[in-house]
Image 1 (cartoon, each protein chain N blue to C red):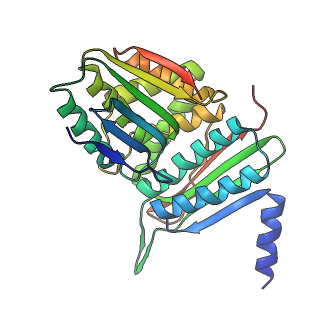
Image 2 (cartoon, rainbow over the protein chains, first blue to last red):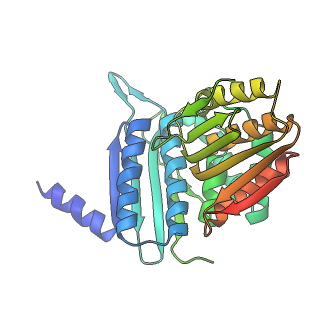
Image 3 (cartoon, rainbow over the protein chains, first blue to last red):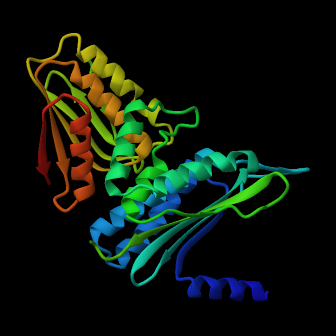
Length: 182
Length: 120
């Protein structure tokens, strides 16, 4: 049972305050938000920073609910994804991982790279352009989640797509929210 | 005209639309699972109100938080209000919430309705 201790040590060394793995729904989203919010409140965090972390958490969680691809591998059907929040002395880190079909990777990568290529004003313009022209998709998204995360973070969206199998990659996203206000 | 009264929840805002008493307010948190479905009755109510509105209307937004899918629907609500004469938006934000203030400013740039900004 050493893995329990190992996992505990990993969480401690990575400064993780919350880890959730499993199916993601609106109900789990609400529970995770409530837990994270209590934790951040009890640490006496600045209200502005708390709001930014909350923003990024919501968009990240609802992205998983709406866009995570079901992993189908023979008899295995899985929706399992992972969500983590870390708190270091100078920043919060919101991290998420979910399976994505390889055929969907290029488009997502292009979107993230476009966002990372923009500065504060560029992000604002992109946000306004999308909100004016978008319609809510069948999945219920407005196509604004990553842009909003980038705006609230003030930094770049970090991402990787490690390979899971012939058909799937694991989309890993990391968003930092600084604890010192500009 | 019937009053639209929705109790707020942890992921949906409180909404009161009351023509007779001149109360038009959306407040709280908005991150519903299906924002289009959630705001549909609001848009329908406004469309009906637009047929015979009060001489003037002050529409209050007092949001603590909204997600991006809701932001699109808030713009739809504002666009619907844009067609009504003597419409004014009262955009409330918590006094230290710059992001909510900025969000209101961005909305005000996207529609042709006067906005008044207020803190709480």
